Length: 92
Image 1 (cartoon, rainbow, N blue to C red):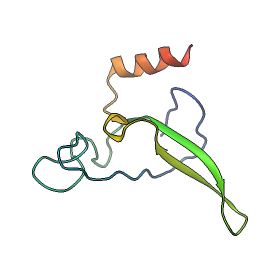
Image 2 (cartoon, rainbow, N blue to C red):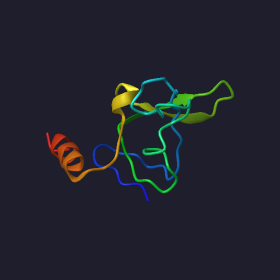
Image 3 (spheres, rainbow, N blue to C red):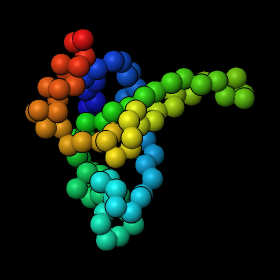
Image 4 (cartoon, one colour):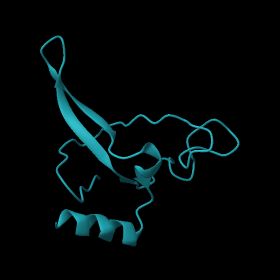
């Protein structure tokens, strides 16, 4: 189940692409793959996303979802402190 802490996001399922960059917080240190500590099936993640609707050449629309911040900062494990910080920011 998805929970939105700030803003609106009304899709049940979505995907976000991430580059595997050596030395990145989002990648494994020794092998070229996304971090298993973060990107493990069943993990709950705190994502900072930006979405927008675009019109495709065939006239239909699609929702594009991107990391809202620098990709290294766009994914966190949802600690209580991080969730409270996002909720406080949403109250402004």
